[in-house]
Image 1 (cartoon, one colour):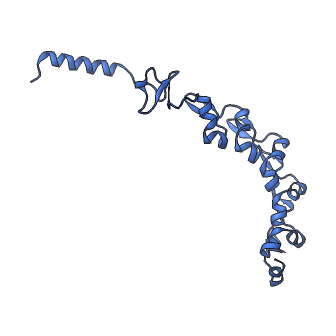
Image 2 (cartoon, one colour):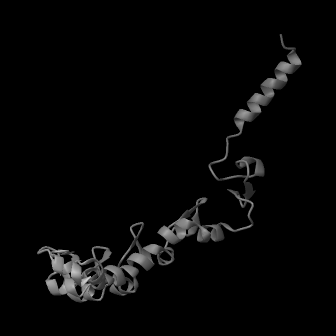
Image 3 (cartoon, helix red, strand yellow):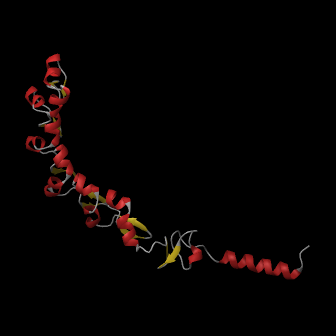
Length: 196
């Protein structure tokens, strides 16, 4: 049986520990409130690398990938169009403006600057994303030179003739010199093979 003084001491320690509520995830008052390996800085649990939360967010892979570049509530978040412009969503897809919580394409100028305009012909805004708007967009894309996709059909660049196919890199290197009648260049005969 426990002696009365030990019993009172245990009861006091148990009552005191349960009266303190644990800090919210990532919030702290003391270093001891943080997980092992983290320290408490400005009431936030953080890695002891000396970087500010903003520096850590800007260096993170989700900033460049999705625009999650701004510290908010202990995490890196997408909070402004500036965040969108720092991301691949802008440079690759032309989605440079924050709208309804997402990076969205809102101007033809952003689309024209994007890699997908050069690669796929996605050079104009349509329903919040960049997409080809004309045969001109398709003809200036890498897909035209690579695959013969010079015509806009149903919102996509596609091949439209044997001439499109014969002018493509795919004809010269893989014998895909014949239009399939729908949208692709294919190897249609042994003479196609001899062209490559």
